[in-house]
Image 1 (cartoon, helix red, strand yellow):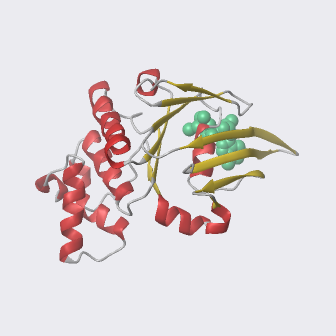
Image 2 (cartoon, helix red, strand yellow):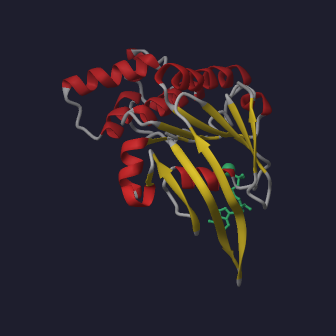
Length: 225
Ligand SMILES: Nc1ncnc2c1ncn2[C@@H]1O[C@H](COP(=O)(O)OP(=O)(O)O)[C@@H](O)[C@H]1O
Ligand SMILES: [Mg+2]
């Protein structure tokens, strides 16, 4: 079964007295164990598309099904809480907390011992050792902050991880490490990882490249496995 099935999704934004079509009947499916790159020029609708996949907004037409069930039927809030982790370009961590605390907040608990242990373990698996996990996130590098954001996205053990330009603020070398982490989450932990990027270098590392064409939501699928 397909993990995510996007069928005939049609999405418009209001534009003065009329509407502007962003996604024009998009059809695409996503499976576990793959890293997908969505590329397209600025303003082509990448973030909009990711927002729909993440259940943060609803399309005017079409359906998004998760494991055969419409996400509207699952309930967008339930769907997001149980199945989706999000990573952003500017990390969006809580700045007055440590990395550990950021992950604990996402786990939705107050820091009981065994939860702390699993948060440390999760951070360690993403390359953040205990001493860095205990540091205020403002005192970490961009790459380290993004690792914590990835750990946070993993906190509820989602099947899907969506990332909007996750390496947009990072240097080339750090970008490679972060994309390497996403690849590993897909191949070793069977996650479905969907990364929006305008970098061809990033896109090349994905299993599947989806190209979004401006003003017309047509995807051209390039399967480079
Ligand atoms: N809330 C909104 N209301 C109206 N237009 C929007 C809104 N959000 C985005 N847009 C427009 O929709 C188009 C696609 O935006 P977006 O999905 O952010 O593109 P991308 O992420 O590919 O740069 C852009 O032209 C943008 O200006
Ligand atoms: Mg965008």
